[in-house]
Length: 146
Image 1 (cartoon, rainbow, N blue to C red):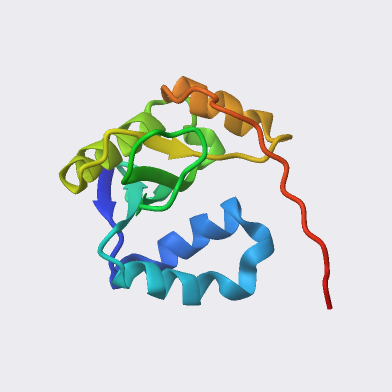
Image 2 (cartoon, helix red, strand yellow; image 1 turned 90 degrees about the vertical axis):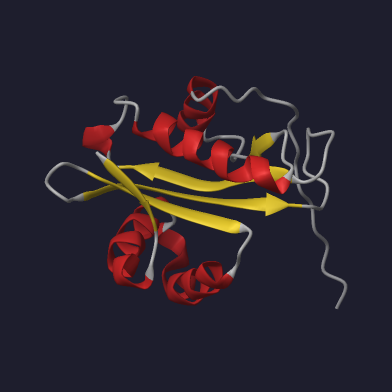
């Protein structure tokens, strides 16, 4: 396995995995990806198999605003992670997370946070397997005023 930061030349591989993680965001992917590549406080990683197949992706950022369940700032934040089903439970996600931790330390981060939908039990289990622990549950509300 080979892990590398995303560059312009790897956009197609990143896009393919991103669409698997967030299939409902099809139209916005390319614009978001271009913006992320320009940000110095975000990290995008791809993992490749020995046959050079893109098998996993990760997106992380440094957040300075309050992050639920944390006590410090800045905080490393896992924006998204996806590993192809045939490659899960093989340590790939662990290696990706370790790279984020090393990347975040020079920014002054001492905490690494993430979130998941309340009903996404697969994500909850993955987070726990990666060393995260649940801090709180939140329900968001909105009201139209116009």
